[in-house]
Length: 251
Length: 203
Image 1: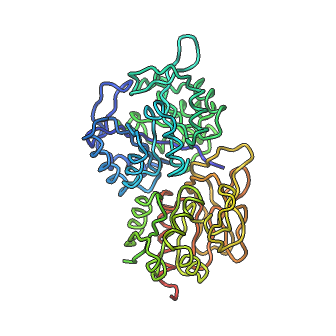
Image 2: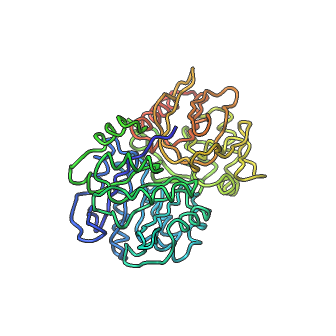
């Protein structure tokens, strides 16, 4: 049986890990290879690296960062942030990524998912969905790091992305991101029951309790960033508590 | 340091395989030259994607026969993920495509209400008599699998909607459905044991 994965997320800009609230107000949290190696030591199951620089110069730096992290890491590495072409995804894989996440570019041109899945396999192709709750219920996909509302229904988009070849969904609640108020459980429930592919819960985690709730709501993996970077908790501590709650984790 | 030829089959996560080999103490070199595949003391066949895409590359580069020869002769070879399925006759994923056919059988898709692809860490149980494989947790990224190990191979199994072949070994040939290079210290130790066994095996 698969164990539940805990995935520390490194938001990287200019070769450094940064973290903000609702994608704004970024502050420095350390060196990507150092943090990745430390999280592997703590028992992390996977690392996600998001390039939040979104500039051409930032792109080159991000490739260097991926190479540096890869040399220190014997865990799966997912890389995303501004990926818009199959070539860009290929460059990230060559640099040391095992999976590539796409977001805005796939919303604009969904065929990108088919192209990536055909070339690299669906297990390499991750659809990152940023979802914001709608006033009248349901969730809407937001693009461009939350700056653009797309009008797209998040559940329908998850279904479509999976059918086009995405092998995993990185599901971020835009409302909860950085707030430490817990994952959006209704969102996780709505999407994990609609697709066959695994779902990673993201946005709002502050405790092992939040992670247990997400797993019970249907998440296959839980992602968090700031709680790890500033020493509030460790992966090992979270896993101990989750195991005590009856969640299968790798120890 | 042991030189290991990593066979370029297309767009595998080759950087991770190389990093894993270096950390396990080997000196890896990437090649798609049939002469290298034939001559190398130790070789790695990585693979992600589909059987048809990988076989197209392998056939196109003239690698199928050198690969079959070295695998049938039991020369030290590590097959990773899709690399294991390529040993079989074919896969449900790519009907009509002939894989290497070194062992009988066809890879089938996971079923039984589980997540597909299988992405994550699963418990591996090594069968009796395995020399390289041990119990532990390994990282998998696959939608297809072999249901049973062929005769003459010692298998480790896992469960994802039913038992499947997590890895199998015969002499110095080790084929892993999981990614040893992404399976932390446990995976690097396994690569280390394979390197050691291959270094000692008669050529």
